Image (cartoon, rainbow, N blue to C red):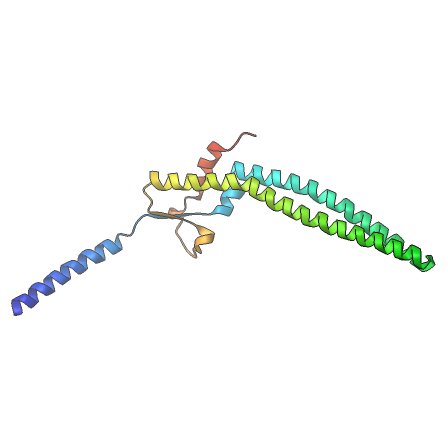
Length: 176
């Protein structure tokens, strides 16, 4: 019985050492920082410039309508005391229509900006993910996490593949 117990103990000890060794030999893990890639890569910078340029155009259109409404409202406020009820009612209705049109334009502008963000960033993010997968395969990583979405609080710089992602992305940036 003692021999059986000793054999079991030795077998269990050996199995424990094997499991511990394999647990300690964790896979190769890396991470990258998506905002840094978007801000520092050539493609990311171009995307940001394109977005800003189109955003300014859209904002200028909204500002024209807002200024027109503000001017009409100020004019009404100055003259409302000398207007008869019929003229005052007509002007109030015009102002309400202008305000509704302005709100509609603002909502449409926000929708355009959201679509523009998706249209400009979508292909860029897809390419970044493709590059990260290639880096993972080529460099035998078991996992590569995106820093922000993974919630990484601490990681060493040796595990950071952000620069490699930027370098690879700069090689394939569109030449528009």
